Image 1 (cartoon, rainbow, N blue to C red):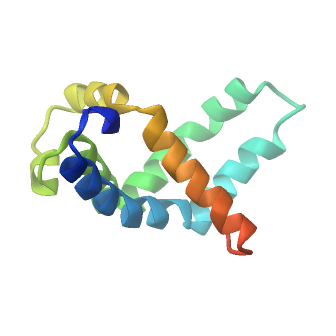
Image 2 (image 1 turned 90 degrees about the vertical axis):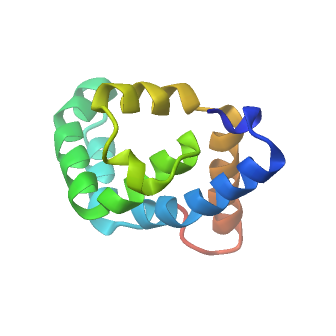
Image 3 (image 1 turned 60 degrees about the vertical axis):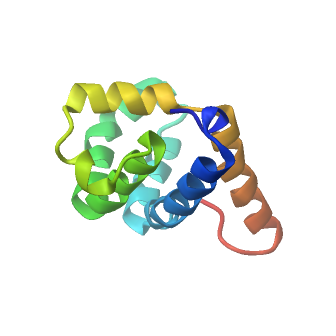
Length: 124
């Protein structure tokens, strides 16, 4: 479900559930190093090609270190208990997450990172 389609109560609960896990993932130094590696390949190869080379490592590391965070993110986006995420069909989960993408949600976290940077904190 998209944030823009949720009631105020659902959106508030989703944002509360999303904030911690997204921060955990975005603050992970190993994941940030892999993203830096992609950016370091710019000019030597296309961004898409560079991303394709790093993506398997990025996914494996994110799942290994942040499985519970990722499940909480999925649960928040789908408005279901985190415990139910592990029981879901993988293809359906991927589709549901893609379908839940919302410019309002993306804007919230982009704006939050920008505000943190302006205050002098780390921005992921």
